[in-house]
Length: 227
Ligand SMILES: [Zn+2]
Image (cartoon, rainbow, N blue to C red; front, side, top):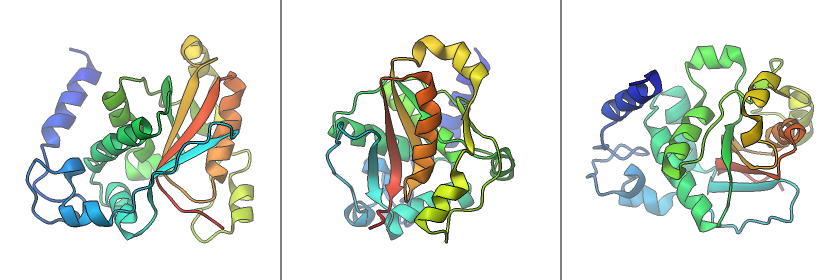
């Protein structure tokens, strides 16, 4: 058994079916979809916007960035509840099926090395891993990387966000060469936990376009629309 298989087994063992709603903590049974209670299922602001493949960068989200969506992301990122990534992966798989999104591989939005080591994991990669399990499509962790630190996006205006992230994401040439046949000419699904102005997604897409993919589609778990 290789290490990857072993770590997957350990993940499954560590994350048995939840006894508590992953959002509000109410007691649930194992029949609940996404391990959410009826109340949270109902109040989660699900997004069913149709995909517009004519757009240069198709952006999709699963839920609005409201109290319920935000609670899941905060619990995953700041309370170390990594098992939530499994349910988000399932939600994403269903969201993609709903919009008939076809893709070949999954690429997570990268974290800076400092952030990753502080948190211990990249939540987008973790989500991507479970999405990969659900869909059978491969996930490539290190195809993109942050070449410099950026300011936290919270509190910045759309223009400040654009400037903050501009040029900060690069294509990892070594990883690209290794998996080139599976990337060039393929449809790449770029995955993140959240999007606000889409400036991070646009920077990632710019770097991914160097691989000459057929398309880049961006999917976030929760999104907020700037008017
Ligand atoms: Zn709940």
